[in-house]
Image 1 (cartoon, rainbow, N blue to C red):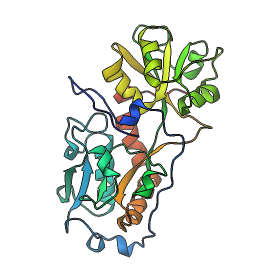
Image 2: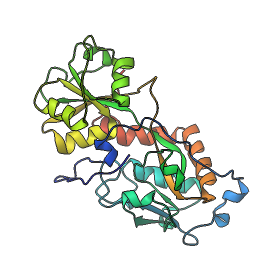
Image 3: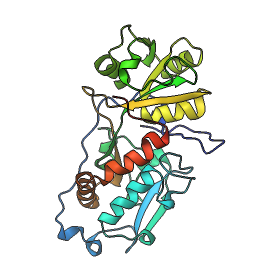
Length: 288
């Protein structure tokens, strides 16, 4: 994804630029270096600053990814993920240092002043030419957005959306998800540009909008007044889009971080973090 300029008068939810662009259709594999457990002990890691894990992210740092524009709080999905990874690597909270890194410079070629960057960066083949990525720490889901008070604003499951007139952008994973998962009784209204689909919801030409969840947070926070996320759902049968931690090309730390992510997935901690910060509490209940 790519990050747009975002306004937040009330600390509103906002996001990455991909939030206003089609969801990435193809993701590139991360390029980790194999790492033994011995090589991943804290004193063996090659770090930007000895004894400190330096983590980059943009400023402002928006909700629900970071709470209160403070990455160091440990609150918000990506702040919590960063500290969970740090913990698996053996770092205490006071041994993590945060660095301000503009979104697009994080995955530009060249030397980095961070050990890894966390900023809703989608793994893509083009970006992977310039930087290395960890394994995905978040698989992007699709979301349904409606206007408060609308017929489908309080839908509790996907079956309830069967007769909805849905708006969507052409060529996106959202469009495929509508066809594969929601399977509405009428064809969706398909628009060439995402802003046209958003305006169709705003002008009540459609009753619901399907976009990826990060985009949904931005739509409801900054683009369509009195709108809400009806819910999120897994887009089975579509190409996946994942966020990855970003590293300088060739950084051997990638393999160690991948081990940490594997552990966080296996013990359920990553799922708990996602549920806490990107689930119902963030206004995005699961639709099944």
